[in-house]
Length: 286
Image (cartoon, rainbow, N blue to C red; front, side):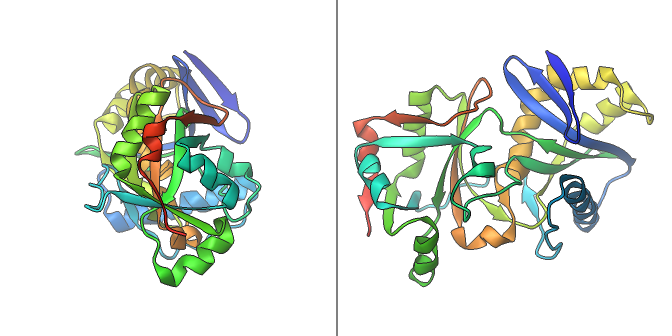
């Protein structure tokens, strides 16, 4: 277990090969309404933009993302807008998986998102609330697809991602096969929520435990150690709703359906898998 302070970033907590970035944490008495949570999250989001020297996103069109994964639509399909070169690989059952930070520097400017992995989380117990800004998803691979391919938006999405369109049938089974091939500890197929503030609310005893260990003063090392040793996996999973499955509204027309593969350890580079059984799910639309 290690704790490292990253200048202008926060506290990087690492344990058994997995890491979590704690950028800010605030304890408050009482419980908040959803509107109050969004107001706090919007203010914290502006704070993050300032210290990162990014341009502020407007605070309109914001909403909370459910902490728990909602059931996938009954159609259980996904669509992939891509280019000519990639089609050959998909039809061979050769699939590429990328780490989240890949989208910080991806060459396709239409896909760049500096907020990938960033989340604003509101934990609440019966008596206290805890606001947290975190970076997570470092131990995950993603495959980005779409939940639909409506004709009215195809021209725009082809312009962004390529002139070919694939349909992935039985996408949950498809993801399950990939998870087995890469040795993922779990996988999630979930539609992205679009909000200019990436916020999620979760009920937890964490605020009470934080108060017990830290009190109301400055953040103590003992709390950081407690999080790294006892709360790492819980926080990674809860914050996924905001850090992985919430994106700013400017990406809304992508209607993204993400396939997430959570590994035992952090990942830094892309990887690919190849299996004929994966090709069985792929259908060429255009």
